[in-house]
Amino acid sequence: MSDPINANPTIVDVSSLPTRLSQQSGQQVGFKYSDKQHELVDKITSLSLLSLKNKASNGVVSSVVPELVSDVDMESSTDEELLEYDDDDEVEDDDNENIDEQEIFDLISSISDPEHPLTLAQLAVVNLPDISINNASSKQEISEILIKITPTITHCSLATLIGLGIRVRLERCLPSRYRIKILIKEGTHQSENQVNKQLNDKERVAAACENDQLLGVISQMLSSCK
Image (cartoon, rainbow, N blue to C red; front, top):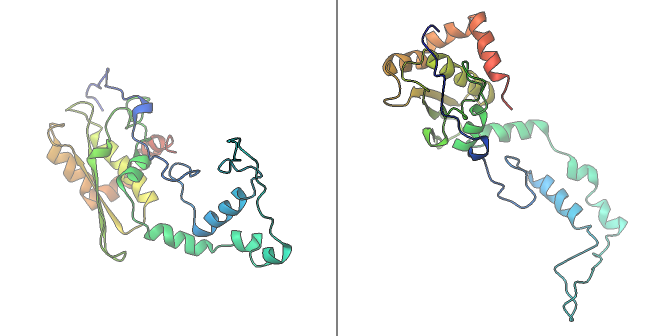
């Protein structure tokens, strides 16, 4: 804590940070519809009274009323059927779904730096290319997430605290089948080996998480997470 902080860190513009692009029309960023929800969305959008895809012979766009569905047909697929799903099944699907690097970046990018009123992504402490995931072939096996952090200065005394904050964030959000490994990026800290040992030593991490004062600081760092 007594070491001088980096008074003029390089700040990355928020608009230039990597985000997950929408891959399907009408799909929100990072949001996935279930099959039943897709079916409901399709039925709702099919009720539109205008279809721009249908043109008259003279080239003028014509409005086409979709074919109406009788009450008898609707009985086979009621709103309750479309909206009904098992909460336990959904949670199980989320736990079994493979996680990619962008999702990990989204989880840790908004963590606040303990020295500056900025996030770890804005300070380039965490970067998408420095995150790698080794997904196991089976859901019953352990998958590994490797994150390399880049301190703002080579003698940063809070590198261990930042790494611990990242670990706490991920352990709270990810299924237990993921093993998290956090390292200082090569050549970015003068005590690289020492910090790496502290960040990946289970006993040291457990002892740190029992420190109320330290947990208070970490909670403050995580308060900015989305």
